[in-house]
Amino acid sequence: MAGVVNGTSVLGIAFDGGVIIAADTLVSYGSMARFSSCQRIKVVNKKTIVAATGDYADYQFLTKIIHQKHIDDKQWNDGLELYPAALHSWITRVSYNRRSKFQPLWNAWVIGGLQPNEETGNLEPFLGFVDKLGTSFKSNVVVTGFAQHLALPLIRNLIENSDKLPSEAEARDLIKKCMEVLYYRDARSLPKYTMAIVKSDGVQEEGPIEFRGEWDVAHYIEQY
Image 1 (tube, rainbow, N blue to C red):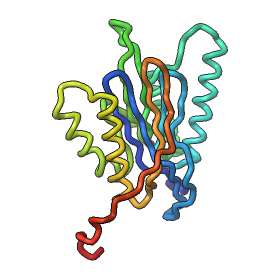
Image 2: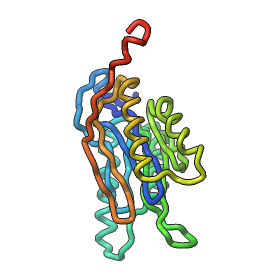
Image 3: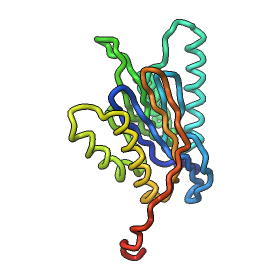
Image 4: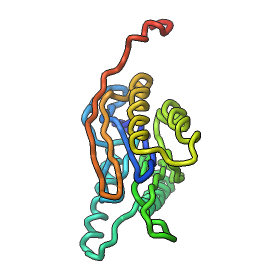
């Protein structure tokens, strides 16, 4: 069976110099908006963050293992870190292994951060997606949940009309607009969200950010 206590959409956008991931703070118990202050973005280290849609217990389970992996890596004191591409690959293998045992983790994951270029060594934005079946891909835009239907067209409208990554300011404005649209259209969302931004100088966490919905146009909608 699917998870009982679930979180909704996660948005991830790569911008010029980093990655931004956002998710609202609501976790629903079935159809009840039960928990309104839950964090669904995990900062792994200064280069890597991860977030998830779906069952909150499975999210907590796997992020605890990831946190322990980070502690184990630091104990070696060799200067190496868990970069986003490695974490993306690891979560893909874990998800595929669990679904093969008919014990899936009921989550869709967004993994982001800065990844060293194999040729130049320069840090470049990385965004990856993994679902509960172990299906995975990498892209400059990754969204989960209802955002795949409601927010992705808005993001593509900016990204696909440009031959370069957006600026950080453009990515922030786009995240804000998408979160507002999701609040209007997704019954499992809140007007309160958190963000994590990875840049060369580290990870910056922001939020919870709250906004007030604009409902003046509601009377134009039929049967409102």
